[in-house]
Image 1: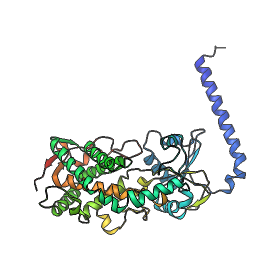
Image 2: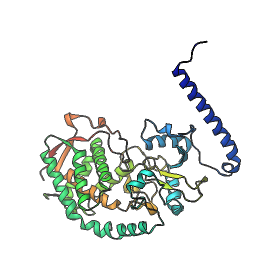
Image 3: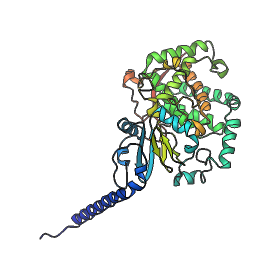
Image 4: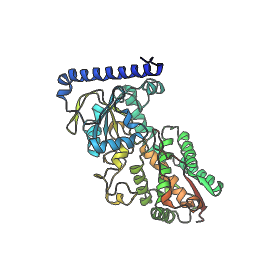
Length: 398
């Protein structure tokens, strides 16, 4: 009989471990099902592997895109197991409404992760603090009433205008080809750091760059937006918020359409189910982590006509706002955990885009066709472009 090699021995050992794991898992399922799962109507989901659960479905793809593909097969309320963590994924406006409005209190806390716990000093920042903690109530009130109130956002106008003017100068000094991604990121960092808010710089810059990307890909839309900006600001040497307040209706629709197709955080920060609830007829046990896939909701054909196309005009008829009351449009979330700085970010985007469209004409380098612009997303918490947006800018003289 041939001698067993170390490699063969390792393979046999691994095979035995897998067989034992599968057998034990099947026995555990048989024991547990009558006692607990048999009484619950759990949401559907794909087949799982031992130990890792459904994590293999997320390998090699962006999580929000992979989850959308799974939801198309298993439904808008889908239960995954990421390792040992039961995870509910919401992919429709109806599911989001039930979690963020009907049962908001039961889903308003955050799951506790070791990394987030360390970075937030035990969950003491506004994003991760427990709903029933005095710290969260105080911080939330401070943000909504003082730091990010409409009055306070208006008071930041000089800072936004100054940084927008710096952006215009930097683009004008850059030469033929401009790295729009880098220029916009620097502007948003400066605006938000000067206003003592660092959390929103990446998300606001990301969405502004996506807006410019979509305008370049859609020359007709670019022409309409640019014509509106130049008509409203005719004869001005720089963009002032007082001149554009309530005047740039089409540009506002462009911003909304960008948020619909490119929400800055495609999977909203996770929520934690703290008591058993029914969501669209399915039982959700306490301890379940919940993700709202707002990227998928914004592209849902049941909620939007021509959902994959960039059509700002849709918002002439479909009146939605940033208040989290329309659950097919949730760039900042909804309910108790809605982003308190949403309008602050929109204000930054509006003046940045108005400045870029007013002072410059834009095109792709080397006469490239707009349809060939790479729109691939990069992996990360924010859905930024995989490649920097490089454009040629020609100064427009008013």
